[in-house]
Amino acid sequence: MGVQAIRRDYSLSGGNRDAVELDGDRITGRIDDQWWKPKLSRQQMREIMRRRDGPGLWHFGLWFVLLGLSAYLAYISWGTLWAIPAFLVYGTIYTSADSRWHESGHGTPFRTRWLNEFVYAIASFIAIREAYLWRWSHSRHHTHTYFVGRDPEIQVQRPADLIKLLMDFFYLRSGPPEVWRLIRNACGRPNPDVRDFVPERDLQRMYWSSRVHVAIYCAFIVWSITIGSILPMMFVLLPRFYGGWLQQLLSLPQHAGLGEDTYDHRENTRTIYVNPVFAFLYVNMQYHLEHHAMPMTPFHALPKLHEAVKDQMPPPYTSLWQAYKELIPALIKQATGDPDYRVIRPIPNDPETEVVETNAPVESSGEWLKVGPVEDIEEEEVIRLDQGSRTFAVYRLKGDRYYATDGLCTHEYAYLADGLVIDGVIECPLHNGRFDIATGRALSAPACDHLETYPVERRGNSLYVRIS
Ligand code: FES
Image (tube, rainbow, N blue to C red; front, side, top):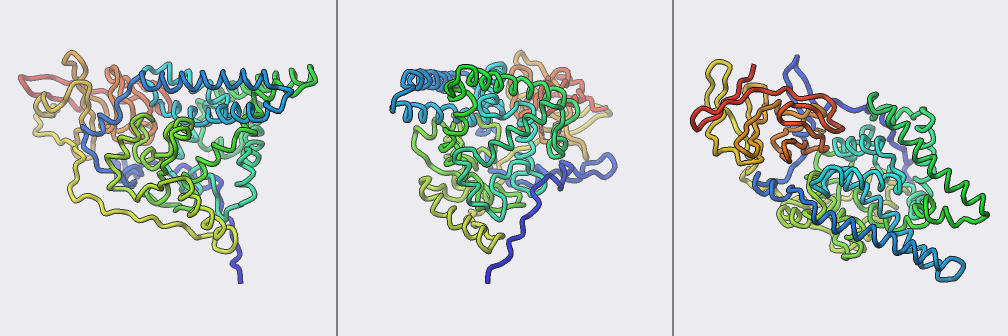
């Protein structure tokens, strides 16, 4: 006899569980500490996270060229049978903007900030992922990956609805609700889930950005109606639907059929080897487990990260076929009587030696805390300094300039010493919020509140921080 499949409540009823537990002012627990993390030395992490413009310019430049070229071929083939393959190619490249939205939303493809933001704005529009809404949604996804009631981006909800999953190969399940959500936001009437994860300060911006998206889509619809041809809409909006097959093929196995409510990405995320064309269109997101384990890794460094940590991960799937061979029966089981079924992945034992480095003050004198010898911090680097229940970040910038700030990000309390120093800015390792190191000013969402800064003095060969 079949078991009654009871749908879990995937609305954000669980709320944004505080990122920290507090005892008075003292932080006694952090969500980020509960997540499993790969063991890498700071040197390895620094090398892997390093930002460069070159690979991004190459990659995204080629993508824009391919998009333009395929659009031209589609246009000149209109009215012939060649239009079918031509538009299929164009729609597939167009929809792969979704992966560009994702990568640039993390702020990782380019070292130059405005290049990330430029690509993000264009890709958000093409992929129908309004920029403000999805930046907040995705940061929540990374904090609470596949926690029911907290993660707004659980793609396959149990029990799996197979018809809907198939419909999404043409964006027919997720597309219309997404367009409706965009319209609601343009009207200033977000649904409760959106209200839950977009902070008040960004609501007006989200409304205006949504209005711009809706206005452009409407212009193309009116254009099509006016000339009595669907052709304009075949280039904007509709490609996200008719060209959605590859995006769904690649993204469905990211988490589907795996665990929920676990603090180990190895139990809820897959890495799958794919061919170079798919890897290009997917911006290397086939290394999805590595991406979740270290979201600051630029797309071009993901293969390197994979090599560095693969002994700590479950074996990768050698092909999409291998992943689907596991995924399809799992989803059928969930849909037809065993909604709690999940695939269990083999998890290797962690290496015995902990190689992640932290720093503790050597000694203190009054309000001044001795950090240690100057050589302990490399140029353009940051170290963590713990004093009792307090954590600081101490930086060395070019030209022997030293600074100190609070050591925890003001968004969800990630250790800033695990982040990246770029041109006088510290970028948070969790959601890429950015702070000016000298002033502590929050520069970009989701970091909104500023950091405290503290004076640093060099005495001889030692550094001191004044902590009060
Ligand atoms: S913890 Fe979210 S930006 Fe730092």
